[in-house]
Length: 226
Image (tube, rainbow, N blue to C red; front, side, top):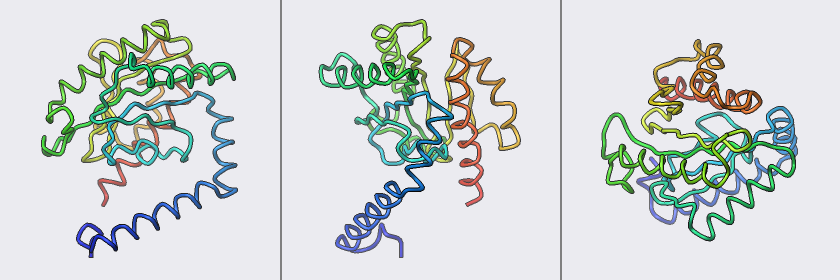
């Protein structure tokens, strides 16, 4: 029987057990070492502003080890970097990363469903264009705070299609890299595609973003197979 159809007490116990298992996995020596090894290879700090919808799980959808990506969640992914607490927390986090010699990539995300608009973002009344326009505003705020040169902090717009957990990376102009239109055999071309999409992105940052895109291609294929 699906967990969604069980008694509430069973659902609560299932959730607590899941939390215990995730905690044990995260704290294991293997996981700790894997995180350190990953960060040594890919030093760019990754922050994700996203909806509080539990389907938006970027680490799972990209195959990134838990603990690498720092999430910031709110209803619909609605943020205003002028909010005193949010602005302070994000700025402190960014400056702390930069002080250790790491660049920062900020994903500003929205989500939608291709199969049914009502499976999209309720926070924006299922209006994907409104969500995207809000993300553009957040990007402008980030560039005002951290600079528009993108040499150290790079804010990037990213869609998340929840039917297949596919990423849509927005670049210059109206260019969009929709990973749902590719498959794992296209992985070798992602570096060239990313460079064309975001030519002002520092080389190291591109190299650190590539594993997420490659991982998403594998995840999409897995979702489709099931």
